[in-house]
Length: 386
Ligand SMILES: Nc1ncnc2c1ncn2[C@@H]1O[C@H](COP(=O)(O)OP(=O)(O)OP(=O)(O)O)[C@@H](O)[C@H]1O
Ligand SMILES: [Mg+2]
Image (cartoon, rainbow, N blue to C red; front, side):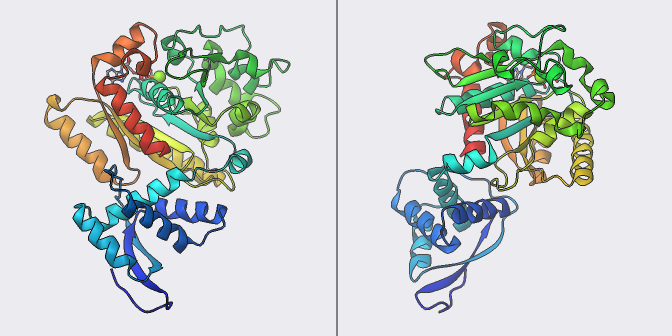
C-alpha cells in the first residue's frame, strides 16, 4: 500500500481486489451517480464502523487496484483490519461486498435488464444440478425475493421432487412453445406455486418440466422458421420475467441445442451488472467430474466465441462432498479450488436430508431447515446473491 499527496485532500492507495468485484463496484457506482473512489470510501467507512463479524469473501485472482481515499483513512483502515486480524485485501473485499449488498440494483435498473438469471448445468448426470437449483431457489425465496424455478430437463426430476406432476407429451409446455407450437397458451398458466407459507410465502414458483422436452434438441435443429435457434428459451421466458426477481434454470445432463439455449439465456445482458446473472456449474470431488468439466468448458467457449456472447461463469458448486472418501475426494476438492476462476462457490456435504426431502417431495429448506445441508444452501445463496 502506498500513499502520495495526489490529489491534495486524498491519498493514493493500492490494494488487491478481485477484478469481478471491482467491475461490479464500477457499474453500481455509475448507476448511483457516484465516483468509484467515493463508493470505496463509503464502503470502508461502513466496514470500520460495523464491529460485527464480517463473513469471509472469496479473493482468489485478486489484482492490483488503485484508488484515492481521504487523507488518514488508509492508515486507520489498516489499523482496524489488523485489530480484527483481517488481511487488508480481505477487509476491502468484505467492505465492498457489503456495500453492494446494501445497495441492490433498483427496481428500475432491474426492469431494464430483467431478473437475475442462474443457469445450473453440467452434462454429467447425477451430480446434483437439480438439488442445487432447488436449494438455491429456496434460499433466495426465503430472503423475500420472488423466484421462478424452470425445470428444463425432460426427466422432470425437479418437478417431481417438489411434489408436482410433469407435463405430458400432449400437454402445452415450455418445450412446445419454444418450437413455435401451442401459440395460444400463456406460459403463465403453466406455472405452479411451491407452497410453503412458513418459509417462502408465495414467492417460490415452478415452471414444470415436460417429457416432450426429450425431442427438443432434435426439433430445434430442424424446426423451420426459428430465426436464432439459441434464443428460443429466452423468447418464451421473457413473458414471465416481470413477475420475478430471480429465474433459475435446472438443465438436463446433456450438451446440444437445449443446453445452448440455457447458456444463451444466462448471458450478461446489455446494461446488466457483470457477474450478476450467469452459469453455475455443479460438480463432484472425483476424477470423472474433471473430464466432464473440460467438455462443458469447450461447449461454453465455442458458443461464447461463435455468438460473441458475454457469458459469466459465476462459479462451481462441489456437491455430494464427503471427506471420508479419502484422498480422491480431498485432492479433487483442492483441484477445484486451485482453478481460482471460476471460483468454488460452495461445498455441499453428502447428507441424508437431501435424499429424505426428495423422498417426501418437499423443499429441503422446509423439510430440514436446521440441517447442515440447508445451511450450506443458504451459504451458497449468500455467495451468489450477496
Ligand atoms: N448434497 C447431497 N447429499 C445427498 N444426496 C444428494 C445431494 N445432492 C443430490 N443428492 C441426491 O443425489 C441424486 C442426484 O441428484 P440430482 O438429481 O440433484 O442430480 P442431477 O445432476 O440433477 O441429475 P441429472 O443429471 O439426472 O439431472 C438425487 O437422488 C439427490 O437427492
Ligand atoms: Mg437434474
